[in-house]
Length: 354
Image (cartoon, rainbow, N blue to C red):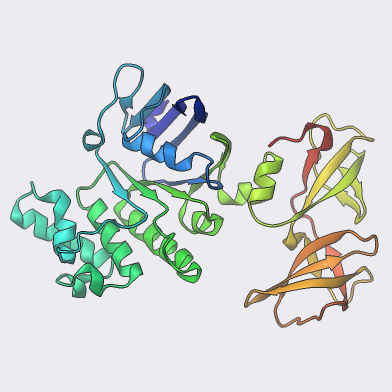
């Protein structure tokens, strides 16, 4: 039932002229949860956020916030009546106002005492108590982002909407900021929806992630399930890294591939003789010097604590493997490997879904 959810989107369609950009999209978030709309550029995720906010009206479907319908066939409440907070890509801070006055902007109707108490509470929460009198140009990008967050949180909105809030940051800073923002939102028990194309940001911040493609939900799930239990080829390809190898079902829980027999659950209806595709993740291939099974290093990418090796098997097939970086192997070097499949991800070859 929708009354148990803080925000619920039901079967919305959004078109611009003859171009349908959102197609029967639905998802729900419970109170205090952080959700994410994740997908490639042009998949419609920002349009969904703008529809929740009230900047776009769907041709079909409903949006419910805090148990109240804010958009359906009969009504379409304007953004200012939906009790939402928004953090934009460019932060949109007022350059002529200092930090505390930027935060004050959305709560000017409060008493002066309540304003100041809320401002100081938020400044402490975002770690900027010493910068209350500073102006935006005197702050780093990460500090400006925290001010924008505090300003959006000040009126205690029902939900907080964030549109690519970390996109202007260095890659190294994005995940840390996402984790920091998550802590702040959890402390305030704020329900939030994040839009991003970066899965690492989504993993660092969100409780549940809605993977989108061509205006449709492909899978709405936890990060763990998206990685280990993708429902279709698009999710398997978009989330994480890996390669697809052909296989043949040879038993109830066994698939034969060029890597040998792999054991695990196979799709329903796939009987022995059924051709399938198997997703091989980098963490499925373990480096083991003592193993009699070997592969040749053909590419390597240093990632600090790990190398991502591209390995060529004796059959000629290439797979990926994450290996601790103290194992510094050179191109064309042969190393021992071991297959370790905790989650077998298999798709029927004849029914590829995208």
